[in-house]
Length: 216
Image (tube, rainbow, N blue to C red; front, side, top):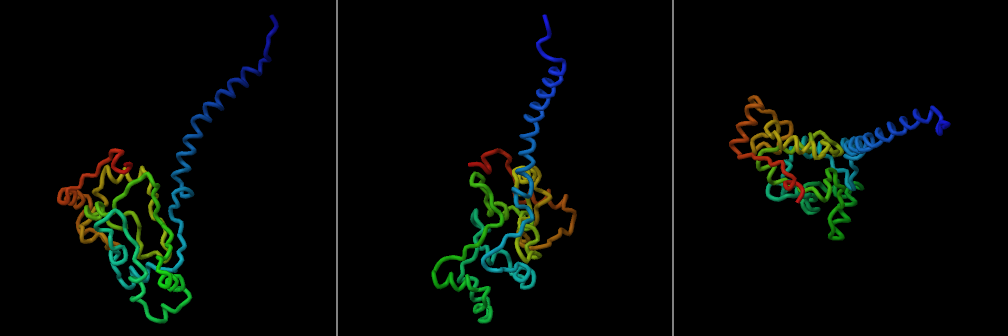
């Protein structure tokens, strides 16, 4: 009986099978790498705002505490942004009448808040509570970076599930005294390895890693 397929057909079949196997493996791996890349996480990308609010001036030069503007961060899940009425009294007439302040003046006239652009945005299916983290001694800069050095705020951490879970598995390197959570550039006077373990016991830190902690 004559051969139905040429000899090269075997090589072609093996090549096709190998390509399919590589495709099945490579596509999921590629997608997993892509969703963790800065293109998706927006890591390091500055976010423009309707008002050129400079954190270097406010948080570093003027030493305004984070909690003054983000007043609910210690007691609620959300770290609120200040109302327009909170911002205006701090500034002189020269600033209030400047072009940069136009969105603020419009906010006052209309009685509507300034539409700030979110920098750190978690998916809707992720629950995060600011209050519990700061109450246990997780500093603002752990997640947000050195805000006092950012003229234009950018996302400082990837905020991926893996990044969050790694902290929950061992929170001790990220803990500090609760009265220092808003201090930018804080450094421990003793070994962080020692202090972290002490603070975990003192503040009863038990960071769960089960799915329902963040996905409710």
